[in-house]
Image (cartoon, rainbow, N blue to C red; front, side, top):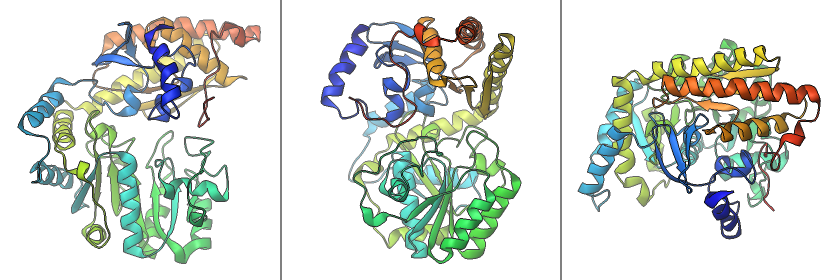
Length: 436
């Protein structure tokens, strides 16, 4: 079991939910066996509390580290900022420097605000949109964080959010007066979007959506949303927290030729340091002065210098193209290896963030077995892969060799009809679930 699991047992008694992020909860991967804590991380390698080394061929801190863990260039910029003082009663000049860089990358935008997390940044964007339009209803597509405006969707329908990445989210604690102030629409479901527009037309303050995640958007879907929001004066917010700065320099909406009113970034923009960014059109963003949006922690300079260093290094080394190449190799490896062993899987997502799922009965059992076997071979891996600049050919080669053995084992277990017998612990969780 090791020191990491022993510590996690203590954590569950002291920390509600065990961890600060649901996506890092050990039960999401391999209950009772996942090495819950790390002592150090560098590149795409992670050491647990027993000093056992693993190669992260999974989520790279849920997509936060586009360049890899402890990138030397980004860390050098951060250490320099710390030495000079990360915060004071005066403001960090890097606020203006980063704003200019972001506006240069996104010519449709003229103003910028900062937070330190993606969820915060989205909440700020929603506040700005409602303040601008003086309307309360939000239509959304995709996952957008934990705040009240989002979870309130499940007040009217307990399964409203199930199709938006995390099923089972409980709106307990969200004021019931927020019921029917946010409504989901599914990706590429143009008719559903139009139905919601027709039903709530005069009450809609904003439409927020992820430009893409698992699948490419249909042109009609994108064009309809842009056209309708512009025609009705609804603020269009593009959530780039997951996809931003992975496909290109800027965001998926640029690749899709979308011009939103606001775009939100976090995660990959600062390579693991806390940072959230809201960029938008001047006529929309100016309203932020008329409502109250403010936080002391939003003024520290570490996130700013980390973002500047990350963006510049990514551009210099064409990291976006590199991610496409590395991620593409992994996705092809999933497909060809599964076919070789007669396994049925579904591969989705972009090359930068790829996913696969088993198309057999007992999917969660098979997913857990996969994670268990890959862990035994020295990999932190599940059914998704977030490409980073730290993933090199040697890592891909070693991973695909292990994949071949693991898929062969799983194919045999499926054929035998009782894969559960190979589990050394419990089955992994599929979404939000209260811990015992």
